[in-house]
Image 1 (cartoon, rainbow, N blue to C red):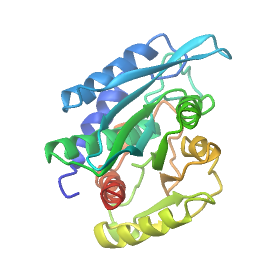
Image 2: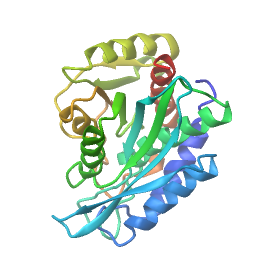
Image 3: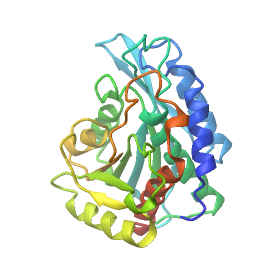
Image 4: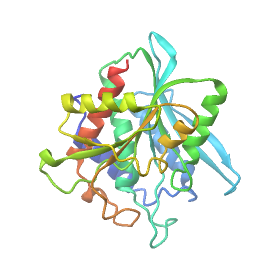
Length: 271
C-alpha cells in the first residue's frame, strides 16, 4: 500500500489530460483505448486487451480496456477495480477539448497505479483481479453495463467491484479534514463497513456515506446486474466539473493517493 506513488498518479493524469479530449464519440476513441492497453502492457500486463462493443444509439464501436492477475487459489472468483476513461465538457466543444483530469483521469490513474504496484511486488491474489478502464460512461454508463451484462450472462462470479470516479479534487492540504464519499448499494453494506475500517487503519481519510448519486457512475451497472460494488468520489464539489479547466493543476495527488491506498487495501483484504 505504501508503494503507491502520488507522482505516478499525477503522471498518468497528465498523460491522459494531454490527449485534449477523450469524449466517447470523438474519432480518437479507439486510439485512446489502445494507448491505455499499451500502458498496462508497459507495466507488465501482456494480457491487456480491448473488449469492444457496438452502440446502436450512436452508431459507434466502443472499447473497454481490461488487464488482469489470475487468482492462485480461486481464479474463477473475480475482484474488479474500474474507472471510466472517457471525458466530457459542456464548453466549448467536447469533440475538441475535454481534458477530464479529475473526471476521470484521476480514477484511471488509481487503477493503473494499483496494477503497477501489484505487479512490482509480484503479488499473487487468491482470486482473479481485473483492472478495467470503461468506455462511454459520460453518455450513459455504456461500457460498464456492457461488461456487467456479459459477465452475468457468462455466470461470472464477481466478488466485488470498486469504482474510482473523480478522486483527486481536494483544495485543502490539511489532511485532518480530508474526506472521501463512499457510495454503497443494498447488497454491499458489509463491503462499505470493511472500507470504513480499513480507511481508519491505513489512510488519512474520513469517510462519509452519501448515496444521492449512486446511479451516476459505473458501479451502478454492476449493482443492476446483481454484483456488490462501491463507488469512491471526492467529497468536496469540484469547481471545474465538466469544463475545459478540469486540469491536473487543480488536483490534489496526495489526497488521490489516500483513496488509491484504501482501494488497494480492500483488494488485498479480500485476497
